[in-house]
Amino acid sequence: MTCNFLFKVRGIEEKMTMTSIEPEKECSTLPCDNLMGANNMEKKLAEFKCDTNEALCLKLIRFPEDVDDDGTTFHPEYSHQIFGDDEVAFGYKGLQIQLFYTAGSLTTLYKIKYSSKVTDTFDSVEPDNIDGKIREIVPAGFTCNTDDFITLLEKEANFRPFGTLMHTYTVHNEEAGELTYQIHKADLSCTGFREYHERLQTFLMWFIETASFIDPDDDRWDFFLVFEKYNKDGETLYATIGYMTVYNYYAYPDKTRPRVSQMLILPPFQGEGHGAQLLEAVHTFYSNIPKVQDITAEDPSESYVKLRDYVLVKLCQGLSSFAGDKLHQGLSAEMVEEAQMKLKINKKHARRVYEILRLRVTDMSDEEKSRAYCLAVKKRLFGPYRKNQRERTKMTKCLRLEEVASHLGQLDTQMQHEELEKSYQVVLGDYRRIIERLAAQA
Image: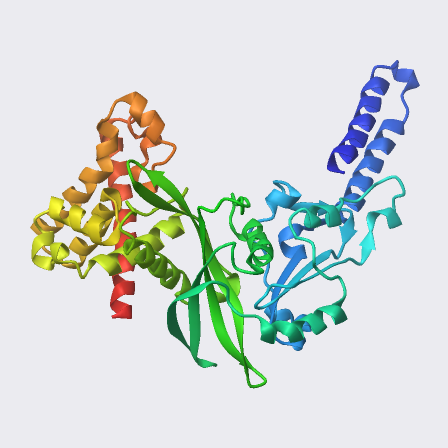
């Protein structure tokens, strides 16, 4: 619709241009009138534009009263994959797209509401097809009737987590006390899981910027699910908290390399430690499989890298090779080997673990020790820049913030030192936060 509207404005502009070449005596006020009319129309049409991140209302429903409780609503972080880069829907005022899910099975209520539609004012202007866009990602089987949804909600007592129970943990909540959570491993052979996963993965589009749906027919996928146990009218029910998908790649000659593809803790439960519990449980699971070479992640975000650092440090701090008296001697082959053999951690990740643990035992107020630590970290940060330009160009696609390889090689020596110091300070801040978190959990 935006294109059509712009075309109309351009049409007026073209008319103005043609009028401007007429003899002066033929000029009239028509072009100005047209321009004012175009501006007025633009303002009126702009009233029918809605921010889709605000318009989309998500809920995880446990009790019937949650349906009308605005306090249970949360909104997407992203909607560009459905509504375009500007994340705007045209043609409605007061637009509200409701996607309400039962807390466990994720049975879906889908409704569209609005106070007025552009066709109420402009006969020749068509609104965006919101319904068509939503139906592209929401699988069949949803209801558009609230009463029917409430009836389906009553059947949640029959829902049970899919797959095999791997891990149970508790989290203290100031209002509810000790809450119990379970992590299950599932696959597509579980009855009803395929349909459940189709509903679950719709959340990816709203909370992972470059998300895409996976091919569920490939049996190399593993699924790990987090559920909360809660009580309703004396019965134990389960609510979906988050999940992770892992793809098992082949590693020559006879190994596999599990790669984390997607990981999401649903927004109402973020910041409670569920991500760390899930990643640690998954890492422990694969560490006990002899044929696993190491565990990686596909295009990890900065937040995922920080979470992984925390989990790997937590796991490695008990290894003998990472004992405090050995850390000041530098990263050793023994550290790399033990991390790989016992925890399936590759050398790159083992080095980050070493740097964090070494920082924890380093007196940074001691100038000599502080300088030695700084040089050890900067040596890693600067290493990629000493390679030839061809290799450097390839690496720019995957290097992280602290490596700043895309332009560092073109800077003079002073600028390189400044950028390197800036990167070092970013890393140092990240490492200290991980150490503080470990201390808080001790």
